[in-house]
Amino acid sequence: MLKLQMEGRTALISGAASGMGEAVARCFLDQGAKVIGFSLEKESRIVHENYTYIAGDITKYADCVAAVAQAIKLYGKLDALVNCAGVVHEGGLEATDTETFERVMKINACGTFHICKASIPYLKKQKSTIVNISSDMSVKPLADRIAYNPSKAAVNMLSECIALEYAPMIRCNAVLPGIIDTPMIQSRLQSSTDAHKLLEEYQALYPMKRIGTTEDIVNSVLYLSSDQSAWVTGIMLPVCGGPLQ
Image (cartoon, rainbow, N blue to C red; front, top):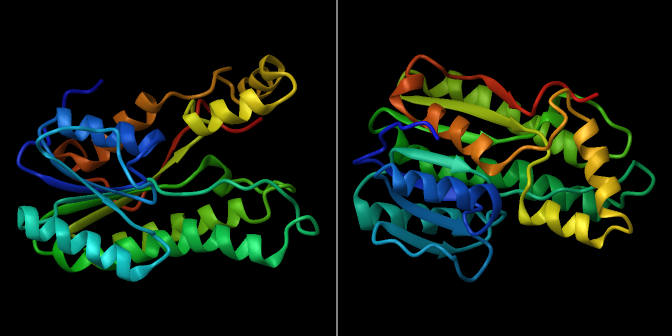
């Protein structure tokens, strides 16, 4: 893992109860940051003197405002925001009902907007960063991702607009992961009729012939949240082992 310092910084991480969000939270704590985790789950597995967990719903703006307010109450400032909360959905146009489409958009697109909007008044008080977790599918149309791909494409444009509006005080970037070995993916593999075959299908999607690890994503998020990327803003960083095949 890259050794970049986050000491003295306060970070709010959505989706911190599991998967990529939990991995980012643990990394930032190891790097010396004070971290506020925000996620839908009632509890977090992380126990650390510099970690506070807040349960809340990213689709509810009031919950996002409350999480940010708690961060400010505890630590007095907010230097970094990482948005990992999200949901995956497979299905084409006719197979996807309007309620499902709206739910995916509400979580992935509106949820990102909510937490960014709630955080901006405090982020813009000093040099700070936002990293939004998007997807490699956000830039590639797929017939059976009628809700997911557009929702993540919205995250990309949201990130670019924020980067433009709030430079030079706030740098905002998006990370575009491929399929990552998280509890969500493991659950999908275990529930399939042939886990080995499904894993091979996932691996075959990428030129690197493997799925990603949470550390692959963590290193990218850490870079974009650190001073090592001080002249980087408004980018979409693919971390996916090459373009989808």
